[in-house]
Image 1: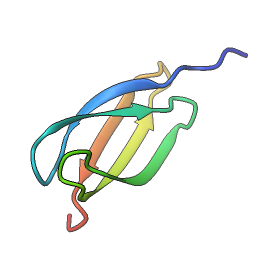
Image 2: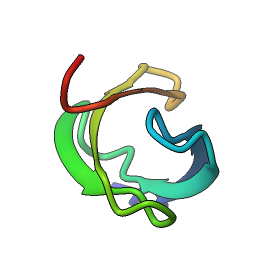
Image 3: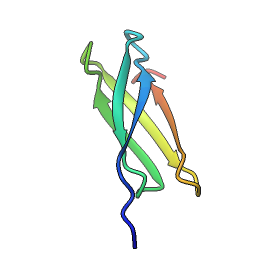
Image 4: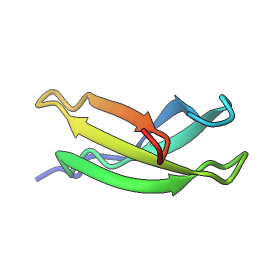
Amino acid sequence: MRMRELSERHIECPYCGESIGVLVDPSVPQQDYIEDCQVCCRPINFYIEIEPDGHANVRVKSENE
């Protein structure tokens, strides 16, 4: 079994609008977690789904959405 590598995705912070890079683990098909923005330090809710071909759909929301 071959391990999939982490892939970097760029998202836009829902608070400050900055583009930030995040690492996505394609070995976990569905992920929900909170990570602070690297620029403004506010909590971003991440929702990630990995498609069968390995493509990661990444959605982000503020804590109030």
